[in-house]
Image (tube, rainbow, N blue to C red):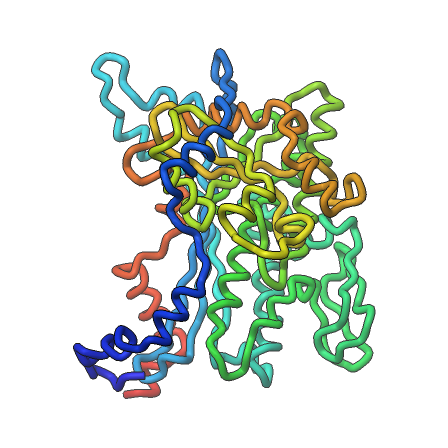
Length: 459
């Protein structure tokens, strides 16, 4: 590692270039590569015409979400002591108002109507103790993080103060009772059981146990290391937990309304790392809602993940010039393993622990390419005995009903030129979720240093 203000030598790369071991190593590596023209044409032949409604089957409302984080040092002299800021933004797009953004007399967009749409954004913010921060006088970083997570997810962030807190949502999506696999304080198995009224309890060892320990985010926390990855896991989990909260709240109040709402998440329909078990709960919740809507003779709720980057999107962009416009492919596990991940011994079902949605590749009639996902149309992944049987069932197009067609219609309606492979609602959500380095990041620096008294201690 260089010293502060030390510049790197200009010839440092030559040691790698001249080393024959490096060339041998690179020669032994297999990785995603650009297909030959013949291979690409063969792959393109397996795409099908994308489904399209005669009259676009669009929802009444679209809710788009995006999240971002910033790990902020409390002082220039203490760069490894940090506070974590998380922000999740939701934008509600009223489709009727969106259709009226353009003045029919001159075809220009009305800036006042656009400003009103921006005001519909609803950011949710979280602040967490990061590296080397002890919270509420707790004597170690890990347990302080556990307590802070509980406190943050117990805040009622609804405008009506209706009691819709994320900690209680954890219990709800687990079937009204939640039992930890083990208590984090002493490792006793099985762990504590919680209900909606009891979100914090005492373990037999005397330590406090929180319902939010279910997420296991504390397992990525170190008393001395960089805890940025735990913040990323939390950001991923909270964004999906908020989705569950919105769906549940509407479902309990007016279930039929969900038939006319589309939810778009910026990213895959998957939860990774320690809180991955949430993905199974999301899949079950969405399936329950859609079964209820089917009983009411209504079309299912549309939930869609939109992935802008990653290996699958890299693959799609390599193929793009060989694909005709207006085509679609459902990404089965065999295709993914052979052309994208390259695993020699693939799992029986890709993403069995982490994903709750099926990936599709879609090239629109205007030539833009998208990687979107739709939730699996099953209560869980035990269908047909699970494993390979589920992997085959999840790629049968007929099981998704009109959802694929509606997703394609929605993408066609909202695709835009401003950013590559982007949709208007997601771009709006990203604008309100992102924390800019300047001035946003600078203001967070000042807030942390002022709030923790770092400036006073240095003066």
